Amino acid sequence: MVQVNQVSDVSSKLLVLNVVGLSPKHIGEHTPHLKKLSERGVKTHIHSMIPAVTCSVQTTYFTGTTPAQHGIVANGWYFRDQSEIRFWHQSNHLIQAPQIWTEIKNNNSGLKTANIFCWYNMYCPADTAITVRPMYPSDGRKLPDIYTSPSALRHTLNDKLGTFPLFNFWGPKSSIVSSQWIADAAQFTIENEQPNFVTVYLPHLDYAMQKVGPDHPSICQELCDIDKVCGQLIELAEANNYRVIVLSEYGIQKVSRPCHLNRLFRDAGWLTVRDELGLELLDVGASKVFAVADHQVAHIYVQDENLLPKVQALLEQQSDIELVLDERGKQKYGLNHTRSGEFIVIAKPNAWFSYYYWQDDARAPDFARCVDIHRKPGYDPVELFVDPSIKFPLLKVASKLIQKKLGFRYLMDLIPLDATLVRGSHGALVSDPLQGAIFIASDGAMVADVDLQQGIPATQVFDVLLQGVVA
Image 1 (spheres, helix red, strand yellow):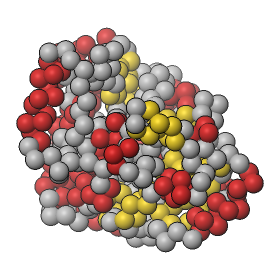
Image 2 (cartoon, rainbow, N blue to C red):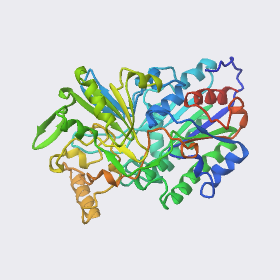
Image 3 (cartoon, rainbow, N blue to C red):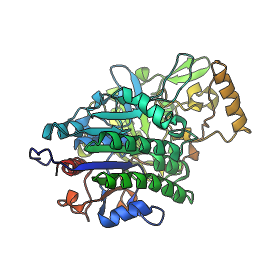
Image 4 (tube, one colour):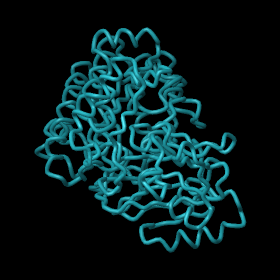
């Protein structure tokens, strides 16, 4: 990492926009604001890393370390002491390396920082933190809400901006509406707090491309929509003397082949399920081998060491797997952490890993047909779709909402079990930089030491961000 001298009370202000899924190839006629920013500043790419998934990449950017050091080996993993798979947790204490919010304060205690919707936001050392945090009353409802620090900001934002549009953030109704709300929250923070360092997570493009693929004609409009949101914040930044960095975590690859690893392990006799009311739950604590699937990456946990050679051989035979990382491979890619599986597999460019473990859809757990990101033992992009077999989906939704209004328990079981619907994914290494993660800076001085032709290593983003604040 770079060494930063103690600075005076005169410091730069930096706004970082994390436009998830944006790649260098997207900058053009559909992104006029981003194109203008890149033309007056600099544009390059960020080297692809494994795993190229949200929580791991963000944490690498904000610590300058690999998952082997910071511990965020995926968006979720197997908690061995609890015998549970957990995804999308928010506690900042899960990160095991010093973070940029603290480093900025160490260099100048008078600087203020803000984290707007980036992951591991809760109890983050930033001065201002805002993130999604639904309420879950005991009657089964899921109510949109946010978590903020300071806590009073939650009520202020709800009053000023309205309730966070949770159901436009993720699920079949995901749209630009949620990223617009996040941008408005960032604008409110900048106008009222003037923090020196602000990070803003804008996920819209990511979800749109996972649903229809990165080359679908509709993506042109999605690019226009997210560019307009970025333009709002870039204009605000310029008016308030902020420098701007736009980056992404990864590019989206076109996929057509889901790979069901847990079904493979079940066929081998290594996976255990538990019958509950005629449905099957994955019993990971009793399983000898299981996969924690996360887009194009999966951690393979082997709880019987005698099976290690057989598991590795089986994985290496699969046509949808590009890489099988053993201990040496994990060390090579910076994934040798106790949270990692005994093996980590990377999908081929047109494939991705599902969490599915049942062999009969009639036996699938009830949450499989719902948007339920915390209960599912793996990432499920099929939550972006409404089951096409439902003849009148709007009528079914209306009936569910009536049950909700009347206070009855209900199951919003609208999600299909057809993994072939998914058209975009990420997580694997990308060979073409134009299709990978992007980096744009409004001021070339922030990357004066970077070879723009070669791009920026993911672990070096931390230094660039830190320099952008204190230079």
